[in-house]
Structure formats: structure tokens, C-alpha cells
Image 1 (cartoon, rainbow, N blue to C red):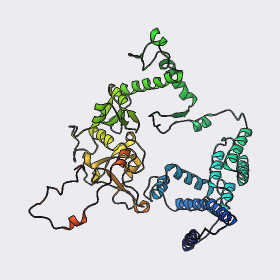
Image 2: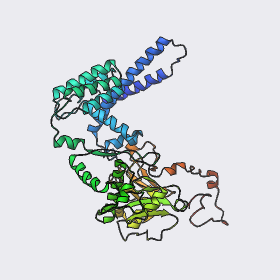
Image 3: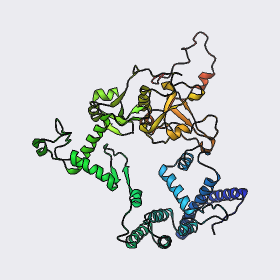
Image 4: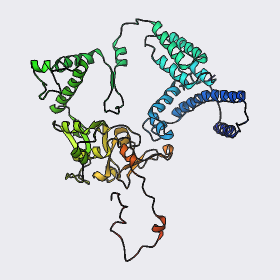
Length: 491
């Protein structure tokens, strides 16, 4: 049922015919159609839209057996899809996951194996369920405990598919939750494997007011560690930011305890800050990408003087300027202020391959994180990359030749490999990434994720071709090094 044989030319002809058929349908006049005719056409298009993802899953699964993400010029298949089709990481993960679950699996010998979710694949192939149904089913199957046997898992999927054929995604989700509850309301005694599978701490996107939400599922060991820390530092009167002289060691006075109006949740929050500061100031956290583990914040001199605006940490967290000024009073923090030159020796030429701490700090302040387009890795997780010319090829370790790149992206650059990326510095002093042929669809070359303010600047003025075509005036050779930049632009 899942074996399909078609020559390369046959597939190309079929896809071309599908495109031609769509063009024919799109060119039809809809003005004279009746209600019933419109509904019939919409029903056919809805069924077709439900079937098309199944073909995409098969093609994507076959592509993954034909080549590798590295040969395509990316560090993962997620990046192949994200870069080539300009989709989000979430959408790329969804497509890859569904291709893994719903496409036939290659076998070492013999015919292909059926999909991991065969009933769902068949229903999708026939257009009986839509992508929303598929997402609910696969997520519900993933919630099955590890102790559930294979026969029960298969029947669980079949029951959900049968429900999806005649009901909406919400009804399917409700049915799945009921079945999961009825499988075994108590379940077996939790073991270390199950606990390890569920552990995690998730940081959500920073809210417009600057607050950050966390969700956590902690192992007994992790909570035991926090439990004793909270018992000490989250006690009433301890680590109270409202106190002129907060108590961070020893025992708080009775006055401090009586004046502490914080809730338990607030005291535990303040305890985490205090413990974090103690760890940072201890000097025992080692180094991170060549710098001591410290909080690095970039801001402007104007924001500091006006006490307005924000600062941005090396991890991409936005902070009110008053918090930046307060944190500047603590030890072991770096504050990179952009205002002309810093006075540090930022050009090392060929004397050193590794960037100096001063260079790393200024690159963190300039780039904010990995410079590859769409990469969200912050400065704390990035390395210093020789953008213009690699050190092994005679490149210089100068600030204007360097940029930040996360480890995988840094290793993806190789001028001699046609499947690798190349980098350069543009006229604005920004790092540009040129993708290999298989991934180059005309997308942007500059990453604005860490510096969104770059999106607000006006576009560059086009060159005046007529002026460029005129012969040079021998009596007015212009400024050394070429013409002066337009007004308002940096030299």
C-alpha cells in the first residue's frame, strides 16, 4: 500500500501537470456559479489540501535518505527547511516530525516499512482528516506513558482517527484526554527513566513589560537543592530589595522580619537573585567563550545620561536603564557603552588568533548574538568568527574583520566547499552570510534578530548611474579613498 514507484521524469511531469491544472482552476470565472457549485468546488479543494501534506511528507522523508543536511549546506534538517522556504523553526519542526511519523520508513533490505502512525497516514492520504486533526493525534500519541504496550498504542491511534473522520480537532482532543485518563488512573510507580524524561525548565518569550515567565518540572533532586536554598534565603526578612541594607547572610533582625510584606513567591524570586549574585561574585564559575562568567549589558551613553531607555544583556534580555545602573554597582559585570572609541587595543592583526577580551566585549555590544540570519543564539552562546578571511588563510584578528557566530554556524563557513556558507563585511560594518546554492533563494544576508532597531533605519540610497558614468574631473579628484558618503551616513 505504501510502495510508490515513479521515474524522475514521471514525477516532474506529474508536478508540472498539477501546476497547470491549478492555473486552469485559478483562471476560472466564479461570478456565474451557484451556491451548490461553489460548495462542491470548495469541498474538493478542501479534500485536496488535506491530501497534499501526505505527499510532502513522503518527498521530505525520501530527501533525507538521499542526502544529508550538511551536504545541503545547513547544520540540521530544521535549518534546511527554515532557510530554503523561509518558515519558522516551529513550522520546520512540525513538518519534520510529521514526515518521520507519517511517511513510509526505509528498510535495510526489502520494501519500505509502514509509517509509525499508519492509520493517521492512510486517513490523510485519502483526505479524511486535516492538518489540525493530524497535530492533535500525534501529540496525543506522544502523551502515552512509556509502559503502554504496542497493541494498546495502535488501538489508541485507530480510535482517534475514527473520531477525527467525523468530528473536529477539539472533539478529538477531548476524546484523547478521556482515553488517556481511563487507561490507568494510577499507573505504575514512577521510575528514574520516566522522571528524567519529564524534567525541564522552560523560559518563555519576554513580555512587553520586561517580565519573563518560567515553567519547570523538577526532579526530586533538583527540588531538594532549591528547597534548602529557599529555606535560608527566602525566609521572611532575607534578601528584601525594599530594605536599605538587605540581609543576605546570617539572620535578619526582627524589624526586618516584621517589615517584610512580600509573598512566599516573591521571597523565592528574590532568593534566586541573591544566590545568583553570590555565584557570580565568587569567581568560581570559570569562563564562557574567553570571558569570565559575568553579566554583559550594552546600552548607549545617551540612555545612561538621561536614565531612560533600555539595556540588552548578552543573552538578549531587555532591561530598564535604572536596573542597568543599579547592576553596574555590583562587581564582575561588564558595561559596554557605545560612544566613539574605547581606547582598548582592538586590532591584533596576526599577533593572536584568539580574540582579546576587549574585542569580545565590543563584538557582543555590536552584534548582540550570532550574526547568521534568523539564528537566535545570544552572545553568551556565540564564538568569535573571522568574517573576512579565516586565520588559517592569513586573516587578521581585527575588530572590523570579526563577528559573532554560534559554534555550528562558525563551523559551517568554508570558502573551498560549494555546500558551505561564506561571510563578508558590508559597507555598514555588518556581517553578511551568503548561503550555498541549494539554500540560496534570495533571502536576507543580515541577522536583525538581536538588533531589531536596524529594521527602522531608512534603506540605502541607490547609486546614481548617470553620475557614475561621467568621466572624472581631473581638477577635482575628490577625497582620498573615493567619494564622501551621503549626508547622515557613517563613513
